[in-house]
Length: 152
Image 1 (cartoon, rainbow, N blue to C red):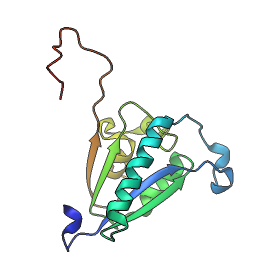
Image 2 (spheres, rainbow, N blue to C red):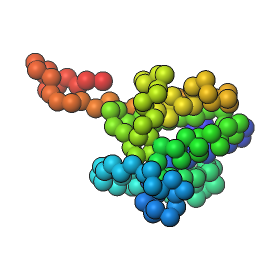
Image 3 (cartoon, helix red, strand yellow):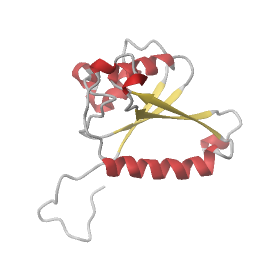
Image 4 (tube, one colour):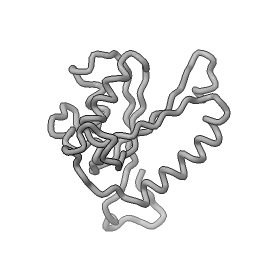
């Protein structure tokens, strides 16, 4: 595990939707989109287990950023300049969070997703390696596919 290497400092940063209007200077410009509650609940469970196993042990740092919209997401990403040499980003295929809504309108590399695109874009002055991870989701069954065969 990377976090066990003495020369590596690992920080997990989780962006969460801040639902309180007072928390944002740009509250009037907030975009409201429904977040899939089952996904959020599953994320919460996974982070709780992760936190218990790794964060409480002191091996990994953890930050939660409560943001209201894409402008705050972009500003937060810019504030990380120079602090990290590798950023691993999860990309939700085909979905837009209120934290990234509109960011894909000016993407240069849509395959990286909105966060990966910002971090690897020319307007982002820091030198950082970006690894984008996306879970593959099937839209439906494929005709003629044998039950014993799975798609990777």
